[in-house]
Length: 172
Image (cartoon, rainbow, N blue to C red; front, side):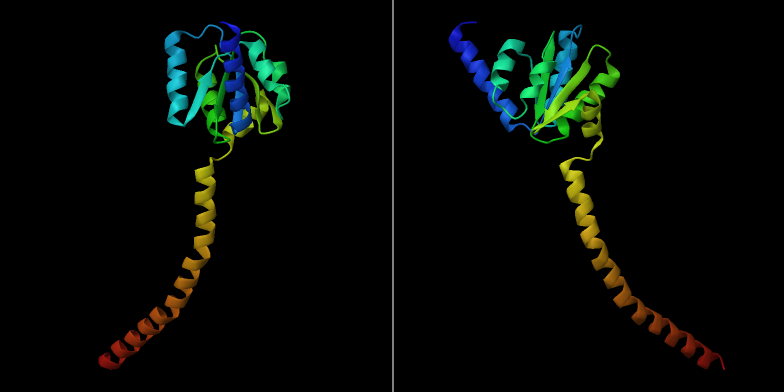
């Protein structure tokens, strides 16, 4: 790899570190090509990516970035998983690591916040953005449906009382 290619890689990695909602760093020693392709496919499904880069170049790309502490995790055979959705990459990596001992999560970063392996697991367990929006909409919609039910209930109660009175009058 010549100097121009290295500069391009550093620039691309810098963009990843700045624009991603979450970046997860893991060791992948022993993963087969098929397993790595499977991991990449799972990440694509959630609009995330997996990137293998030289640790030295990644450390250079991290200089001056808010998540510069990730550089401490970049030793050995490391892979970077990232996504704009703050939980997607963490969720996929956590799930994959549970099913494959060869992938070991070292930590990551969520914005400026550095995460250890337990922190990545905690992020993976969080609801996604879409799930949070759905629950908020449900909370907002619930009072309206309760009000509609309360308004409609007295009318139905009055109607049932009147029909009962009418039935008794007819029976007598």
